[in-house]
Image 1 (cartoon, rainbow, N blue to C red):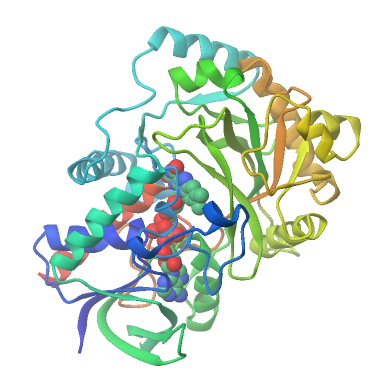
Image 2: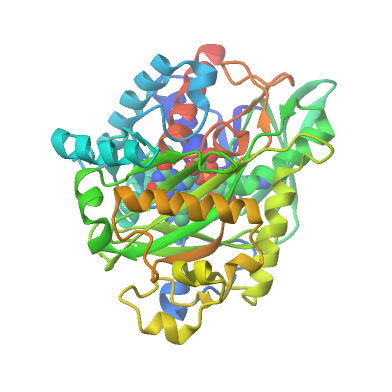
Length: 468
Ligand SMILES: Cc1cc2nc3c(=O)[nH]c(=O)nc-3n(C[C@H](O)[C@H](O)[C@H](O)COP(=O)(O)OP(=O)(O)OC[C@H]3O[C@@H](n4cnc5c(N)ncnc54)[C@H](O)[C@@H]3O)c2cc1C
């Protein structure tokens, strides 16, 4: 049966495409292919086992209905300045309007009315003053915090809504290739992970929204089918964890302090990302067994710590221009040093040029919220340039948040964000291959829930207009 639209990936980008297509009254022969499970079947066994058991065939944290969003912290960044480069493609005003509209949909499905980081003008001024003195930029970004458990409820409601509207959702199916007729994409080829059974799905429009973990696969499709793309950046860094007391002021006033700096001597862009007050450091595993660190926080259950990542953007030109492979090698090396687990080291030990021992972690005020992380030496795997950027940046943040650069501050590694391979598209997300569109984190244009969601909304509107 010919579908109007086939969507690869049931992350925010994919599901908001379907949602908006329905809301705009578009034709309803919509199929979503998702290699993971429906949201109600997604369970990370770590809450029982206490440690990551490297689930096969897929990690439940990043795979299944709502994609990486289900177990994410559920922080919706309500500013076009945050979450990727999409505004460059569609314009800042359009991005702003879409954020307002899409935020309204999250509210309809049960998101908390409260927005963090607004009001408190005088205190924000004081924080910004310290940031300026430290050579950092403070980015304004209101945040709607869904919380991990609430995000799952909201996405479950969306899943049920899509089912009720007749959207076909094929879970446990892996999209392996595009179906091509000459230079036109006419659907996809899929394989069931459990049995190896194959399926061909013809469609008028094919939307790839395969997320960060689908970036490698999309890269191979670009090579095979001559889909135009340009190498983007890859972000390499660490997840930092400190006691809530240290972050008290910025947590209360801003919830998330988005700081950007260009520290000496390299002057590369370094930024904070994904701050989780009272949160938990987490591990996610990619299909190639790479273990990377992340973080999230619940709405109700709180830890004594705040975590956030510090990321350095990396660009290459020639003779080497494979940022994903570069970051993967760093991740593999770090995993090797941690015997397959996430490495953690105290900031003071990095400055002293020594590894961290478990007993030193046991003596500190800050207790790791990722208990299976291994104490060790992250500097043995981190490139000099990246490590220097991180150290300089932490020292600058210490002026804004006194105590941030303490001896006991924890640095987890590897924190890697694979945003490379930016697919070349127009502002309606049309690639050079007719009938093919790319969305969300896999496309290289977004890096967050809200941006991926608004990209889906705009795609839904475009398709509704084309099909209507
Ligand atoms: C632990 C964690 C915390 C996060 N916290 C936040 C946060 O607080 N705020 C924020 O803005 N962002 C956060 N993020 C990032 C955010 O979740 C992503 O930016 C967002 O989910 C991207 O949406 P997407 O639709 O592009 O892709 P994804 O959400 O990654 O979804 C892609 C889907 O495609 C499926 N897929 C991939 N390849 C195939 C294939 N070949 N065939 C079939 N299916 C396939 C995957 O299984 C996945 O379900 C977090 C991410 C993680 C991992």
